[in-house]
Amino acid sequence: MPDQFDLDKYLVRIGYHGPVAPTRETLHGLQAAHVDAIAFEGIDPLLGRPVNIDLAAVQAKIVDGRRGGYCFEQNALFKAALEAIGFAVIPLSARVRWRVEAGAPLTPRTHMMLKVDLPEGPHLADVGFGSCLLDAPLEMVPDIEQSTAMGTFRLTLSDGLHWLAVKQPAGWRTMYVFDLVPQVHADYVLGNWYTSTSPHTPFTSVLILERLTRNARYRLVNRRLVIEGRHGEVTSEQIIETPEMLRSVIDELFGVTLPVPADEVWARTET
Image 1 (spheres, one colour):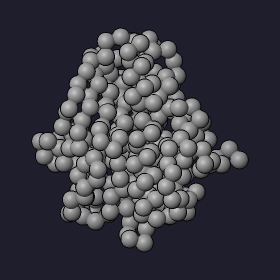
Image 2 (cartoon, one colour; image 1 turned 60 degrees about the vertical axis):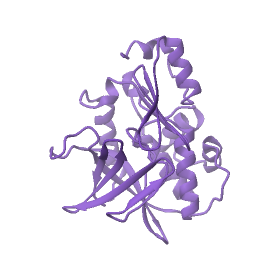
Image 3 (cartoon, helix red, strand yellow; image 1 turned 45 degrees about the vertical axis):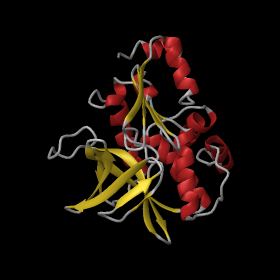
Image 4 (tube, rainbow, N blue to C red; image 1 turned 60 degrees about the horizontal axis):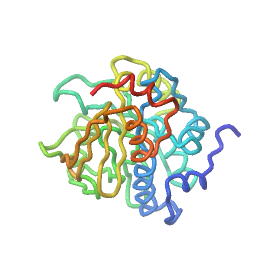
C-alpha cells in the first residue's frame, strides 16, 4: 500500500529505544528523540522544488532519504508513528504569530500540529514549529507554566482560541494560535502549497534549519549559525563562509543530506 507506514524504520531513524505503548512516557520520549534526530528544514521551497506531504513521500524523504522537513511533513510523519503505536490523535492547524506584531490580524492556517488524547488528559504534540521547536508535548491546560528540558511554555485561552507562548530572554513570545477543529489531509495540502510557493512566506527566500537536542538549540538562517540555551539565550554565533562549510554544517550538525550541490543552496543565501 502506498501509504503503509513502517514504524520500525521510523524508530531506528530517530534512535528511540524506549517503551512503545500509547502512554505519556512514550509520547515524551518520541517527541524528544524526533526533534533531536530529524532537523526542521525548508530546503525544497528555497530551491523551488515541490513539497509532497503524502505519507509515502514524507517517509521516503525523511526516513529513507536522510532529510528533514517542515511542519506539514514532520507532523504527518509523527502522526503516523503515534497512530501505529495506538495513540488517539487529532490533527489540528494553527495561525503563526512568531513574527507578527501584537494586535495584528490573524494570519492564515499555515502550521500543522497534533492533539493527543491520553488518560491524563489531552496533550499538544508538535515536532514541526521551526521557529521554536518543542522538545516535549504540553498538557492542554491554560494559564500554567510548563517547563521542559529546553524551554518554558504557556497556553492561554482568549475568545475561544488557544494561544501558545514561550519564555524568552525578553519575556513571553507568542508562537501560534489555534482552535480544536480537526483538519483533513486536503486542508494541509492547501496550506502546504501556500507555504512552499508564496513569496510572503520565509521558506521561499530564506534557508532555515533547526535542531533541538537535550541541551542546545541549533539554528541556521542563511549563513548565520546560532546556538541557543534553554530559554533562547544565544551561547554561540558563527557566519558560514564557504559553500563547503555550509554543506559540512548541514550534514554534520543537522544530519541532513543536501538534495543538490552545496553551491546551489549557497547561491540562494545571504548573510
